[in-house]
Length: 164
Image (cartoon, rainbow, N blue to C red; front, side, top):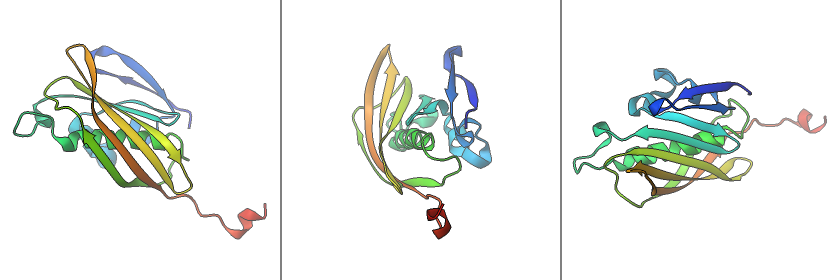
């Protein structure tokens, strides 16, 4: 898959991402409603790296006026998914088996950037990690660290495949 997808980020900055799977680059409410609901912006999805941004606003807050941990986790999980999708065959089904998150700092303002990457790619599983950063007041600080395992449903080979 070698399509280039141009995305305009907040502030008018544009970025081009190569090999961005279509279900990430052109989400619809049917294919990726959570991305639209939260206002995610897809920054990069190639070479085992996934990056997702989201502007902090009142919709993301829990009653203590901090970004809800579920939003932070969802952002990290999506960045890891984008990273994995960039290194497996297009259309290969995959999903999160488990993930652990450490919340490092609370977030009340700014913009979040989740950077996911492939740590290990095996036959049917992948170990992934993501760091979520907050850019506020001209500082970029890590606010969460995630480690996850993903299942990959590879196409099954047949006996004839082994004889070719």
